[in-house]
Length: 175
Ligand code: IMP
Ligand code: MG
Image (tube, rainbow, N blue to C red; front, side):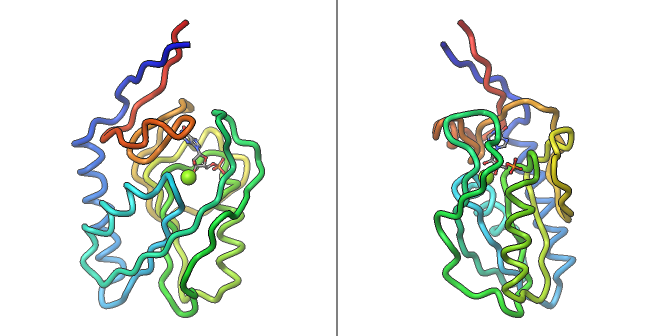
C-alpha cells in the first residue's frame, strides 16, 4: 500500500508553539533549574528545540520505553529498554513526550519516576489526543490537542520512518 503525508501542523506553527512552551517553562521555574527527561525516540526533536528556548539552567537525560511495534495502535504494554543515567533526587523534573494517546506510557512513567524522589515532576507534551485517553494523566504543558488521527513527523514515526519531517503530518494509506 502506498503512503501519503498530509500536513496537519506546519513547521512554523510547531516552532512558534515550542517557543511559547519554552517561555512558559522559563517563567514557571524562574530562579530554579529544570531537568528534562526525553522519552526516546519520539521526543528527541522536541526536547532539543524546547531546551534551546528555556532560559533557566537545563540538564537533559534520556530514557526509552516502547508500547508500539510497527502498528498504529497501542499494545498497552510499556517496556523500559533504556533507563536514565542520572538520579532524580531533589530535581525539578519535566518529562518531555512527543504525544499522549491512551496515557498508559506516561501513567507508568510518572509512577516509576515518582519513586526516585524528584523535588517536583511535571509533564510537557507536544501533542495530545484527548479522545483516546484510557488512563488519566495530569499534563502541565501541552503544545497541540489533535483529533484521533495517526500522525508522523517532528520525531514521530510510522515503523521508524518519517521522524525527520519538520512538520506534523497525517499518514494516509492509498491502495
Ligand atoms: P500511550 O501510552 O498510548 O499514551 O502512547 C504514547 C506513545 O505512543 C507515544 O509516545 C508515541 O510513541 C506513540 N504514539 C501514539 N500516537 C501516535 C501517533 O499518532 N503517531 C506516532 N506515534 C504515536
Ligand atoms: Mg513516544
